[in-house]
Image (cartoon, rainbow, N blue to C red; front, side, top):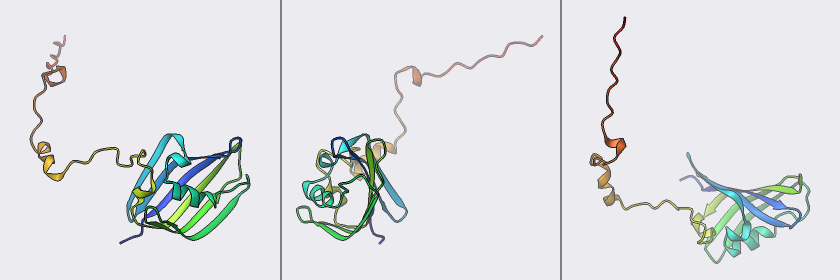
Length: 158
């Protein structure tokens, strides 16, 4: 089975020094999932404290370009290991610095790295036996959309 890879796009507000998460993309083989936020979320409101602390040690403190490699990060509180981590920081522009964190292999459940308030599975998944309603034809609705549309009659040509 192919390794689970993750990419986290972040930005730092140079005025406040605060880190924000723009999006998280995970991929395994031909499947890719992306979670993005309408407005960037504070780093510590997305991830568990262990990950915030560990990654925070490697995030840039200056506004310069930076590439940093870490062979292995372990989040003992949740039992997740991040292997071959690359942190790529762009030089700051207009008071914002962009950073990409790339993880070549996640060992453990990726969802365990997120705070419970971040629902990666916000769309509920029903049990397979409850999908039988999808096999039956839809019931007629009692609204305008369910009524037959009268056919247009063409006008006689002269």
